[in-house]
Image 1 (cartoon, rainbow, N blue to C red):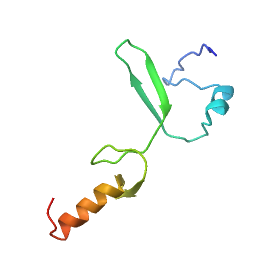
Image 2: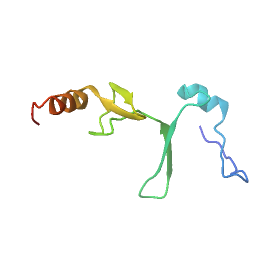
Image 3: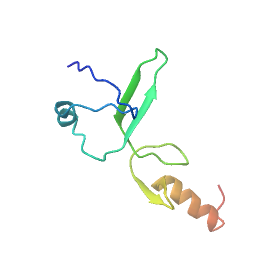
Image 4: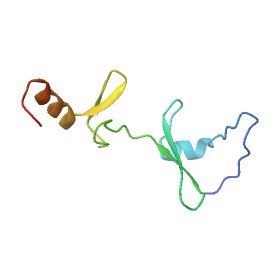
Length: 84
């Protein structure tokens, strides 16, 4: 499926509703945008990652940052004097 879109005067590009529906993207969903080595723009739904290890999945938000269960256990052990 190919769509041609123009960039607005504000620098925005809209994602057609058919594409959003197909991918399950809803209004206000976070998206990750990156440029690959060939100059292509990649846009994909944001996956929350742990701020410490970069792992995906089972994360919780602490003071505005995401942390996974494994890193939170390590941090707690360090806090309680359990070492690395």
